[in-house]
Image (tube, rainbow, N blue to C red; front, side, top):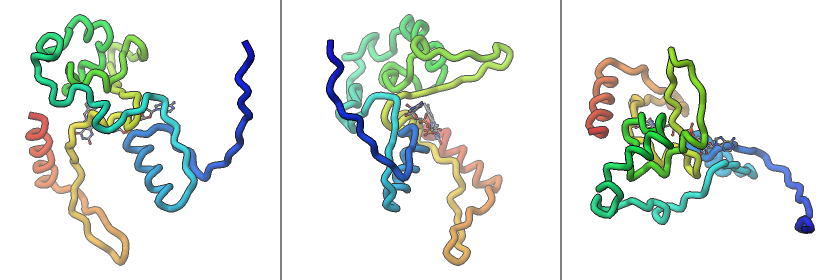
Length: 165
Ligand SMILES: Cc1cc2nc3c(=O)[nH]c(=O)nc-3n(C[C@H](O)[C@H](O)[C@H](O)COP(=O)(O)OP(=O)(O)OC[C@H]3O[C@@H](n4cnc5c(N)ncnc54)[C@H](O)[C@@H]3O)c2cc1C
């Protein structure tokens, strides 16, 4: 079979961002807003907002095992990812399969590496908790983050636990 006749193209970018999660996505936003010609490389599949949220608003009776998930599938394909609290039958397609992308770790010091290989990375599955101290003062033109206080940490944790409940 003949190789397709595709002429190699050369293009120089000002910036190349690897990964389209919050980190890469935000970097790309900043670069492009400043006029830099930016290339974003993403290893995973595309995610179209809305269209690819295939279980959104799906009632449990339309899900396998009434939305409880197939425990056998979880154990076989998602033994590590399913240890992440929010993992469930409704969002499993936004977690990598450990069976396809295994990783090694010291049994004495196990490390839970939760991953999502698709456009947006783990910003698709994050729990919306923002534990940053929002109090900012302005020094000249520069915003300055104030050190976290015990009270603000506590209120952040309360917001976090309320949202996770
Ligand atoms: C279930 C869950 C709940 C969470 N809840 C919260 C929360 O409430 N509050 C909070 O602050 N944080 C939360 N987090 C953590 C937060 O989501 C992550 O810290 C953050 O999204 C990580 O962003 P990132 O861009 O650094 O990495 P990722 O989102 O992992 O993005 C990395 C991207 O790079 C791509 N990539 C990887 N390797 C390559 C390669 N070689 N070439 C090209 N592309 C590549 C991946 O496909 C992915 O798209 C949660 C995470 C999970 C999983």
